[in-house]
Length: 236
Image (cartoon, rainbow, N blue to C red; front, side, top):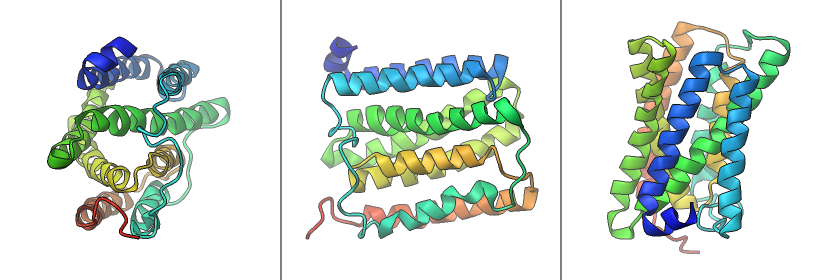
């Protein structure tokens, strides 16, 4: 992996994304999110990405060296934290019990880490050039959202998948801008993991779901524009 990384960092990132989508899509389609197989697949992706980063001393490059020092000017990530709870705005009503609930929760927590690592870490950093940062931001956000089209392979309805893509693209912009301006991947990992984990526990209320989707789109636009206008470095 090191040779490929050094030769073509973008290709390295794309291969990670393709492998993730194909393998996780296959496992999800055959066994579901609440299976031990899904959890094991995510553990392997988590361990593999962490091992690569640590072996090559890339913690600082990929924002795994510490918490952002400029959290105040990023509004302490409050818009992101509020939206991260959206899956339980309609109350708690987990549809699973016992080991299935446990496996699903753990899997969703790991999804947050793996997807942030490959979309915000590997791909975004590979494309990031200060004079063309907007390109890297857009590609990272769109790729993250469109990547959810793999859910069609699991039998999910087309309309539901398209809505999920728009929702994910909105989150893609929030997470990418927070990472770009904050320099740390940790807030993104936490928010992403919370979103996915709480999806296991939320009630199924159509009105609340639409409110959440609408709020996410609006806040994504406002917060991303706010972050875009900040200077790259904290003037303090």
